[in-house]
Amino acid sequence: MTTLADTDLAALVRDVQDYPEPGIVFKDLTPLLADPAGLKAAVDRIVAQHAPGSVDKVVGVEARGFLLASPVAYLLGAGVVPVRKPGKLPGPVHERSYDLEYGSSTLEVHQDAFAPGDRVLVIDDVLATGGTAAATVHLVQHCGATVIAVAVLLELEFLDGRAALPGISVQALLTA
Ligand code: AMP
Image 1 (cartoon, protein in one colour):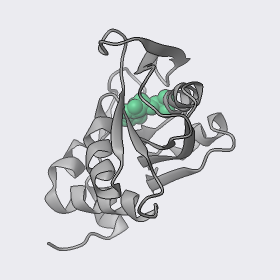
Image 2 (tube, rainbow, N blue to C red; image 1 turned 30 degrees about the vertical axis):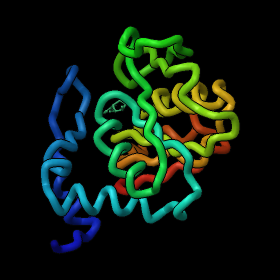
Image 3 (cartoon, rainbow, N blue to C red; image 1 turned 45 degrees about the vertical axis):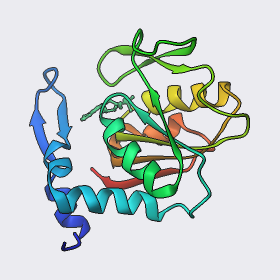
């Protein structure tokens, strides 16, 4: 399989105008995920930023984060934990509400998802305002675990999502 340059990876991201609302340019990563070389490059580049044995759990944020969290966790020798929208997890949960670029939402995680002191890598597809990532970081920390980094495929720099994540290492493969 060929390896992909950053420019080729970026070319696999599709801009969808006015979705899900007028004025929003939605960064659709499904072409990148559907491309064998694109998926491999994305997963390999996230994995390469972490030493083997340095991550205990990888958190995937519903829903597109799930698609990346599982292969990354597998390759790092870590477990995978879903952070989900309300009502999806069957056990006792912690929940956190937050604002989005468009609207607001709530995320939940199982109260027993982490062992105390677990080193956690949080993964999502896009970092926009940072509200989703910040809520996820809060949930992980509330469970007594440590967030070592937030990794995303694409960071929308103009929304300055990093400002919502003070003290957290943010790793973005692509920026727009
Ligand atoms: P935020 O909480 O504002 O950082 O938004 C991040 C979440 O919303 C991620 O889970 C993204 O999947 C999604 N999202 C927000 N804005 C966009 C966008 N312009 N294009 C694609 N996904 C987005």
